[in-house]
Image (cartoon, rainbow over all chains, first blue to last red; front, side):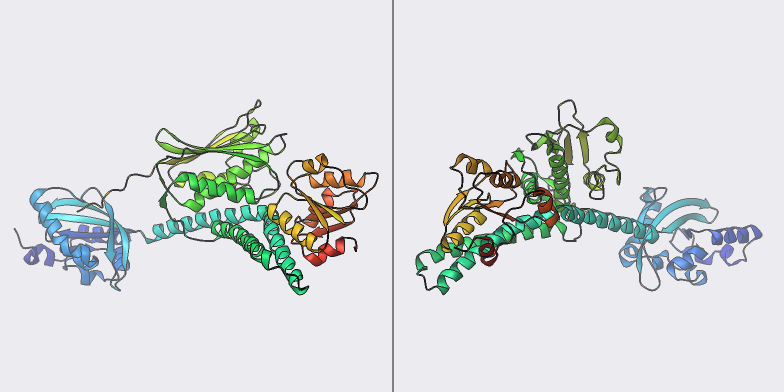
Length: 385
Length: 115
């Protein structure tokens, strides 16, 4: 193999065409690095100086490892050598996401594509690099905004249910207060209450607990938290969400639960899935309320390898003109709320690799919404290599 | 005095009966309007405590029915709802008292006739 460090070509001043080429490289927005067969840098353009904080004059002649974090740097020579020996392409012509090392020690994501050129001086490799940080940042911002919006919709749902939830809290508080006052009165009158006081205190404690449960359920739902996926059974999750929704209901309504009971687990963010169920059940109750005998049916089952949660109501169904905009934000016909419920619900479902579908019903049939979620993949032992 | 309590919440109904008995009243409890209507009607010297939120026949309808009786009992409404919701349901009705939840024994005693 020729030793390029002693190559006379490199010592000579660039020819006119070479100078032109270099100035073109320097105007490129992407970083461009050309290396020889021994991974020594031949060209390091302006964008690279900016990207890595190293001047071109310092970079040229050094091993390209200087712009790589240790874990890549360690094996890079081997990779180049192995390609030259075997011709098996691991990155050339493919491009992939790698990490780069700035002179200040910052490691950052890069998109790297590598081309190869045969020159009279031997093989050269041309790397084109793009700093992925701006793109990653905007992706992160989008994800943050989306989770903010999802949270906002949950808070808004609780807000809309607020009056009814306050009413629900009033019941245990009333009972608690009256039990305690009954004991207080008996005590201050010197009545012998030993026989019954234990029983009354138990009842009072149970009422306090009931109030606590209501608060707890609400808190879990509205608290701000990072979305977390975990592998869960869907039935208890749906059941809890129905209970939460009924808390906030003024209407008395029949709720039939038809749970499959033996469904495979799903990999989901439980709070977000419950948010969808709360939304669907609230809508169903609202749709069914004007009928003489309002009833809804919530069913879980397996369909085409997916877990499906269906929420039926016995209302009039969804009118055809409302159907095209049903899942659009702010298109709601309701006077209360933000009209975000179904739009956000569908977004959450799709983020989980599932979907939210509707059968509008009509002609004496109520509407039915189906939340479809893929079954969690079976746990795989972590790959080696 | 005899006090009828129409309240569907078991905890509220039970504690209310206890405190009313404690105050020296005879208490009859009903879980809903329908069971009140099936029982011997209250007379003019009785008090009827009605929760506005009942399953089935709503509390306001019970109030309307009671206030139309020949011998009108004392009608006390209890509720945890907002003032506007209460006003809306009780349009044109004037029960002897409206006590909002959470209830206290003092508020209840004020709404009941001195015995």
